[in-house]
Amino acid sequence: MEGGAILAELQARFGAAVVETHGHRGDHTAVVTREALIEVLGHCRDDARLAFDVLMDLTAVDVSRLPGREDGPRFEVVYHLASLRHNHRLRLKVRVSEDHPVVPTAVPLWPIADWLEREVWDMFGVRFEGHPDLRRLLLYEEFVGHPLRKDYPVNRRQPLIGPRI
Image 1 (cartoon, rainbow, N blue to C red):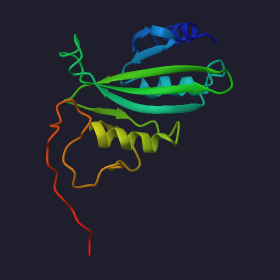
Image 2: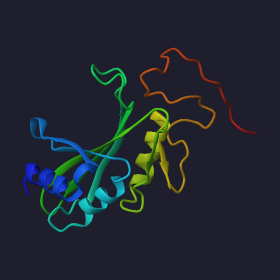
Image 3: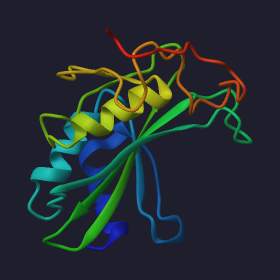
Image 4: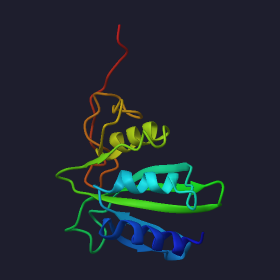
């Protein structure tokens, strides 16, 4: 199935839950609501015509300083899906506000989401509701803040920790 047809199928099936779509430079992307995220991801995985059996990546973007996005939701959580059977790809995004940076976990759909969601939590501070073990992955527990946020101070000093004896 061609990327444009995948986007059209998602719009037809989920209606207003698909906020916007585009195929800029061949990267077919659908932005969905937080409430419909798990249902859309599950459909993408389970529908035989789509068969997105691989979660290639899950990340986030702090869009607070992008022109025209200053007043919108601060974060986009981005899911890169691939189908080995059909050799097609799809990017799904969900927009998340700074006031309530929470999305449902995708771990029940793709177990690899466990590590990817922990990385997003660690770097951006977006929480994944229902995650089985949401704790820091790359940084130590005493680290203050989330370093991939655009407002994280570059020269911030962190508490030094030594070996526990």
